[in-house]
Image (cartoon, rainbow, N blue to C red; front, side, top):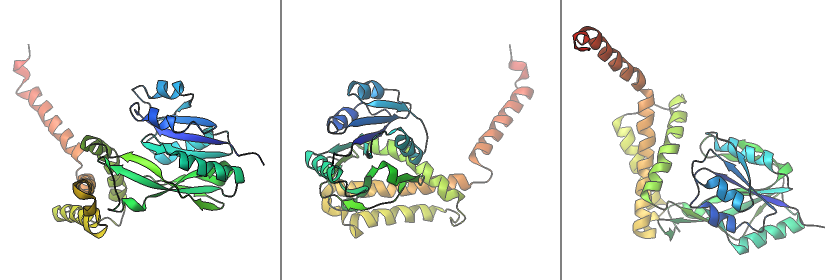
Length: 278
């Protein structure tokens, strides 16, 4: 029985710094496919330099991007990898053994998360398991707006070796990520009938409870200063979500209020300011 072929699928946008090292850990794959979300840096030229095939597809939904990758794969299997993730030789060998034996249709991988330059063993980071390798015929699609999940059939294998995740490399990076995903979660919560009117105490309580869970319930404090800071950032993120829920719940909307202010200023210029025009 010949080994089943596999394509690495990378969803990327402006990843010129992280992409090269990621691609270097994927040379064992038969093909590499990059789904580019309208990058404005050197992401596309870098991908092509490493022999990757690039498909341009800009969409706010990661589920749709993953499905676009699925559509573009021509091999028996596909392996979703993020630009800030690294495959070790041991993990690659383990995947190749399963491809040789063709004994499973889905592979689940444990991720080793490196946050603020150190491995996190607590704070619920240690339980990070991701479904990333699929037989193409077994993967039906993806669902979910915030944390997308695959729709699949077939036998699942739990791999022994870890995928390295080089995440949260700076506070600035964290803030950029927060700005992108907190509004998505806030929008979903604001449209849900289960979400109550947000008060100032709601915002404080959500932030404090998230910090408590990460730092104490899941023992993130044992990861030292970095663990406490990460727990605090997660608490701040929860507060940002609910601040934006409050914003979306406001009636009239903030956009309508600013429009009203603009109209009042225009009215003043039509009356009081008419004599000032040259």
